[in-house]
Image 1: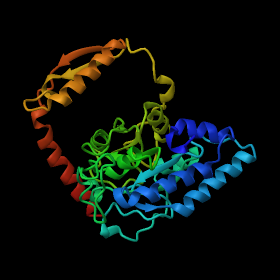
Image 2 (image 1 turned 135 degrees about the vertical axis):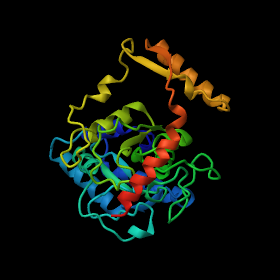
Image 3 (image 1 turned 30 degrees about the vertical axis):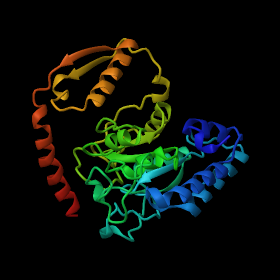
Image 4 (image 1 turned 120 degrees about the vertical axis):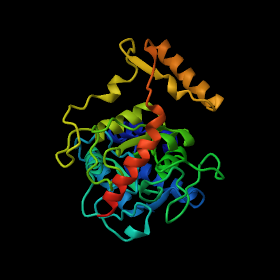
Length: 323
């Protein structure tokens, strides 16, 4: 069995049951990073020594019979705009080169409590402003499926790391597509949660009314597992919604007969790639086959969305970065 073919759910299950060692899993991923990183440049920094220390500590707790979190021993990569205590955080900018975080972002603290092992910080477009990960001050990340192509952005490093199995799961941030677009380009699952579902405390802000943190994974269960671990109210983020967090994993595979989906007619524009349109409509058919009701709707202001985004995002970025 190769550790690299296991899901995050399987890794945690096997570590908790003593079927495998967290140290062995972490070593396998660090070896994979060492092999592929010279070609892909998915990481800004790899926490080799600290990752192994974290893994050994988890194994020691397992040996003592201690109760461990649902992500015990799962290696994870984190976009380099989220603070990890005692590690550098650069946002792929030389402005922050050498800066060391003095505290954990809320999502990082929650993942740490759940037992994850932090492999390193992943590359991004500088300050998350871009859609190709070519605009990093340090290096250009390559798409694992074809190194002559981009991985998308701004969370290109996080998407590429999961696609190349350099990490089973990762975290990214999404302001105007920075999780969803690189996930699509790298052939992995990326999820931008509803605004307010996940705390942004410890995320270096781009556009505060748009930013959200979300997971990358190779399957829906892992995505749900990570989201469940990081979601929930946080008094340090006033925009974080004070609502209970459901068990997202338990909701997978449920009957969709109560689900209603609106399909905006304005999204199927002239010039849309035929292959993309077919993929979307095929996905809609799958949902209908599972019992969901799909109805065509109209969002008449769609044509103005991009223009509004390019007013809000740069103005908020200017305010945030001035600090």
